[in-house]
Amino acid sequence: MENQPYSRNGGSGILPPITILLCLAGFVLAVLSGCSGKTGIARETNTLPAIFPEYYDLTIPPNIAPLNFIIKEPGSKYRVELWAGEGEHMAIRQRSPTVQIPVSAWQKMLSDNAGKTLTIGIWAREGKAWRRYKRIEHRISTDSIDSYLAYRLVHAVYLKWYDMGIYQRNLSNFDEDPVIENASTDHGCMNCHSFSNNDPSKMLIHFRILHSGTMIWNEGKLSKIDTRTDHTMSAGIYPAWHPNGTHIAFSTGQISPHLTTRSGKVVDVADRASDIMVYNVETNTVTTSLKISTERRENMPVWSPDGKYLYYISAPEAIRGDDESLLHSKYSLMRIAYNTKRNSWGESEMVLNADSTGMSISMPAISPDGKYLVCSMSDYGYFTIFHKKSDLYSVDLETKNYKKLELNSESAESYSSWSTNGRWLVFSSKRIDDVFTRTHIAYFDNNGVAHTPFVLPQKDPAMYDMVLANYNLPKLITGRIDLKPNEIRDMLSTDPQKVKFTY
Image (cartoon, rainbow, N blue to C red; front, side, top):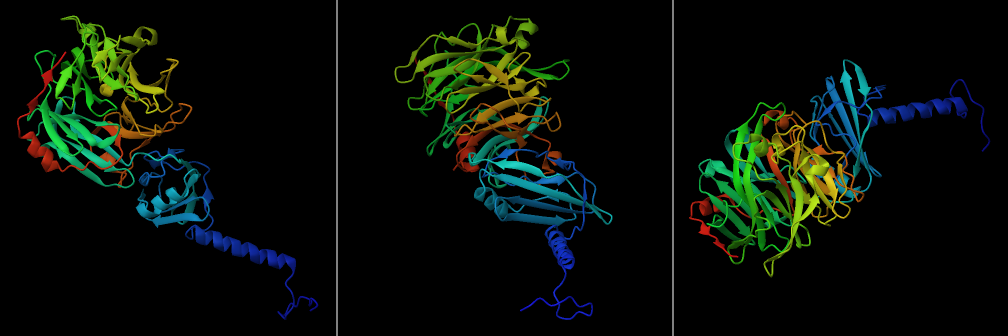
């Protein structure tokens, strides 16, 4: 059929090219307006939206819970779009600035697009005009994080505390369960929960002041022990499971809290004296060596992943009556060989000397591949949770080179622990308000670079403004702790089994 001429009166003629282009343009504009929730033509701001928590430019696990946030921009209506990969799209439109992303849709989007980019678009309406902010982009890692996190939640102000508990959190959603709360144990102190190789079936918890003792959960068997002996300085304090799961290193010592007049560290904890001992779970015995029980202060043990070395921090002996030597000493990083089968010790070795770094080393944690050690470094001392100048450093255990990690802030960074694949680092930080410690998560790549960290996601992101409590000792575990709080409570009411000392 031949093309017929265009008729002004609307006959059967063909539309001219300019009319076709105008029609197409109108169609495209309509589609775009529909996709953006009828926001119409939004004014581009070319700035990132202010949100809390500050989730920007992150590397996130493919199995992490939704990164819910609060939009801190003015508006009467908000629209949020998330997309990743081909065809994966999610849109949320609401009046509230609090954005709670549906868990199931989020989980599918991340799992289907591991290794790709997650993009978040935010619009805000004020009056009749919409503003469109610069897109936020995150990288979805192909490396998963361990499925659970255990931590102590303590409501504390300086030296006063009353309510506390140890909890486990499913990291793929927002399910949190108490492992044990001290409301059921007459409000005694509980601390230093520890696991063997991130295994939830091998756990210990110290109980202090009331119902004292160390509870050990070992593959379905629950026991309570008293690690004090006539040959050691005290009961066990900071624990570290050997990779074989049958030995646990403890520090022993005399510690005391102090109020100070120092700016940025109004509370301190003194390590008056400390040594290290090793407990055998199978024989209920402890042992030590004159090489790690010296006049110096040996503290915070941690095993190498192959189990051949015990790393620890060491400071000069405190001089009685000298607060400078007591509180303000610097700790070096050391190690010693130990054979668990033969109960034989090697010679202590210096790994990183405080005299060369000019800083004090604390809270060492070794990556599962044995390549890196992450520790806290500060001006002095070893109890860094109250030390504003405390930062996390990594030490290459082959070269002994060390560096300040990229994830640090102007606030205190302290305790850290690793995922089983060595790609994720969780740590305590006060960066949100400079008062309370919260758990942060950072990707640690093959080149030893720690990526931008993010605070543990919560269902209600305003929770960090409402719950005034510290998250202590975050530890990744590979699954749920299959132990009921009342089982722990009942065990605590029994007398502990005394350990035996052996040479």
